[in-house]
Length: 332
Ligand code: TRP
Image (cartoon, rainbow, N blue to C red; front, side, top):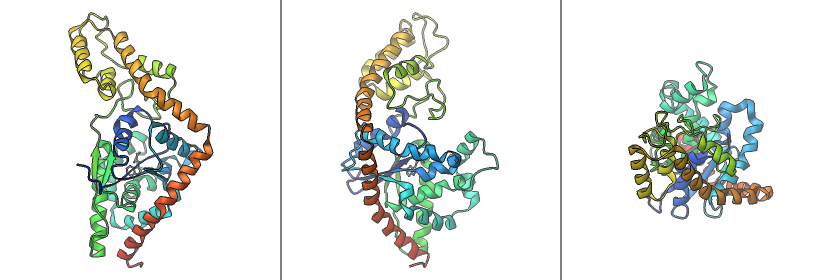
């Protein structure tokens, strides 16, 4: 499935601290890919501005925070390139060129954009940059000649749209200047927020990677379980139970989780005992990440250097792709 010749590109918008959903959904795959093929992580600050231009200071502050999250979970900047989107002007120029290959109707039909427009309540007042962000994402992916993109299921339409653009550029160029990419989906289904809705940085329903023990406890205790499971002796439902979703995602002892599910279904396992187990598990997972994050945060100069160095490494790669694409548009 993964070829050492694969080129991996993925990114995150710097809009808030990364959380356990990111860890299960993509950070774990990135760690597994690290060292097995070329990999770049892009901190997508331009993409964040497509709906947060009014909070540009926050976005800028979040860029090194995302880098800290990457480093804290074990991304090694000597092996994996960490780059900042806004510092790579080739990405912006590629976006402008690709915009000529995409119709507004196609963008409006993109299911990811549709869902996000609804979530944000934009109705007809969609910032043009937001509507076009799939094109900017295609620029990100193709600028690195990426063949493999670790993403959540919600991003699949982005991959499809990227490959449409790739084919159009190649047709224009009369030769295969760009490669199509394929998604790498996580094995864990999307992790819900503590109350069972979509986990989101802005809803405060996700567990941040840097969460202190009392925040982990508060969020685990707030987890939605089964409202009909009032007493420990009552039989409980496992499906839709957020605690089990987290145990499935993070407890490596799958046999023990299966036994817990059986006991829970039969009756005899109380929510507080179940939550205590999860809390302990998450604390063991997050304690080393939290410690490393705190240590790295004491040296902001180091984080800035990682970003500067990674972006400098990425820049010539993106410039070479831009030269090829300019040529396809007779701008040689
Ligand atoms: N859209 C992604 C997110 O919402 C971030 C992103 C930007 C990205 N560029 C990318 C993901 C390229 C994969 C590939 O977080």
